[in-house]
Length: 472
Ligand SMILES: *Cc1c(COP(=O)(O)O)cnc(C)c1O
Image (cartoon, rainbow, N blue to C red; front, side, top):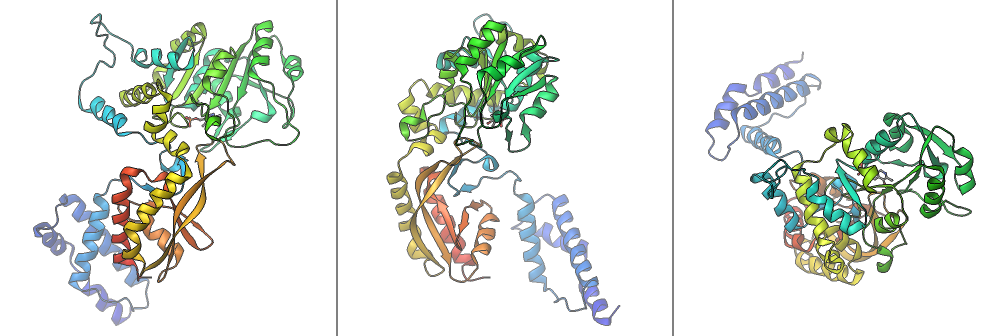
């Protein structure tokens, strides 16, 4: 080992001294276990750096060590699940938590968590009640279905429905609907797990009623339609409608099921979106079992909602898997709160954040963008070019792929740091800001920044640029 390395290693601070100093510092209040972990890890890392170097690692001053300890301790004390600012313009962003909830709904979550509740207690009889009965009535009201059940998520809904109704039997699905959703949810794989056998029919682009007819055997239990969610087959295409399928299934004594994926309760085509079947329409078509997500277009908590006819749903309710896939009181509280909003659709479009973000006109977003611009422009323009630009937002969550929603964004072109560095630094903030880079510009789409976030969002950007604006 070179003399220089030996010298550097000797200069490293002593673990116990550092801990002692940090413990008695008035501005640090972290559990001693965390202090110790940080000090030991950081000194060890520095030791390895010296050992693997050519002896040219700069000697750190006491002040520099202290500052590094403190910043590392702060990082350790931050929760791992953190709030972020979503500047991506993807409304139902699966990686950023899908649907967000209104203040009223999050209040109901806090109530369910902080106090006792009648989760499984019937207040009329004083006897044990069912947690599901708390939302079943309202789901039936809104969808027109006879019965309903809620499980952990839509993947679970599909699993329990197939396990109950088609285990060891054949289920016929069109080849054009064998979808893979992000996070490795594949219809064929879920079927295999449920013990149902997949019988693919038709071609990728076209499936006819006669294809289903030909495939029906003694051992067939179900005709299944799956919403293609995140992809589109365009051109020379044809799929069998829910209505046609129901007629065929009735003739042959089979069950019909539809995995709707997003499952909207509102016809969004009235607001300029492509026409998608609503849950109500599929119920009306007579499909026996319909499943959809709680946190996609519905705008609620993560959940898998199953609706259908009384007899079929009651069979699913009795499946022991139901206990394993059951929802907790937080989901119930949030779901009831969100569903209640749907009794008044016009109001729901304003109060349910997902619906509001999807339907708020571009002119409103432009005003919001201008408000943010006015707050930050003068204070950060020395560090970055800043402009208001027109862009497109996306629905996300595997719903309505390829469909663009006209929107507005703050565009940043930093003067002293690279745009990739800007993206990284904003992502590493205590409250990260997530945007996207396009042609060497950083874009923050204001569709997914809520009105109530604007003040905080603006000050955060100002503070950020004033701290790191000229550092590369
Ligand atoms: C999203 C989706 C699922 C999975 O739903 P989760 O609620 O994420 O479990 C299943 N099927 C389809 C068609 C979907 O779009």
